[in-house]
Amino acid sequence: MEFFKVIKNRHSIRAFKQKQVEEKKIIKILETINSAPSAGNLQAYEVFLVKNEEKKKEIARAAYNQDFIAEAPIVLVFCANPERSARKYGERGRRLYSLQDATIAAAYSQLAATALGLSSCWVGAFDEEYLLEVLEINKSLIPVAIIPVGYANEEPITTSRRNIEDLVKEI
Image (cartoon, rainbow, N blue to C red; front, side, top):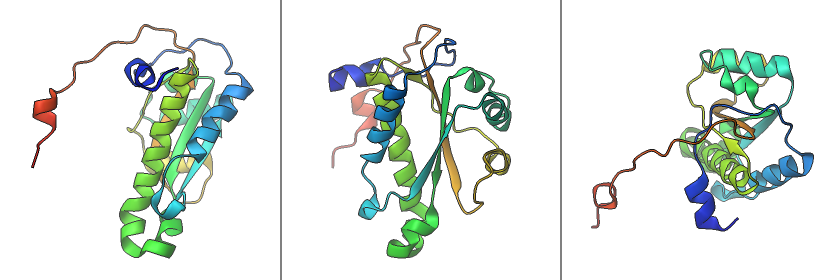
């Protein structure tokens, strides 16, 4: 899919078909995540790929009962790894760069999914502590985003955007 078409076609989808995502598409998404830019090329983030039905339900509960998350065939959870970035960049790496790295990687996953004919939704509302418990992961990581991925089972809603003149301030 051509880049600007990918950008135009990416929408938040909250209903997924009960159709598995092909392994080659999952690998392509993961390769795209791995190519995302990061501060100092440290890739100060971790990605958790969840296919297990029970874990997906628990993730949905951790996300304040956003049950559509569990409908998706795969769920990606992006966590910042502050200590990985801090080794090179100190406090700024810990506080900012690791979060930016995880955010960029998550955005790349959504663009890759769209390019592959899949849909996704950025979920940022969740109980961080509960999510860490559900995933049984190191408490030093910071969950940044939950991205359910699958085949859309709804038509996307086109939302309005700010005018460029309102958004951009030329200096």
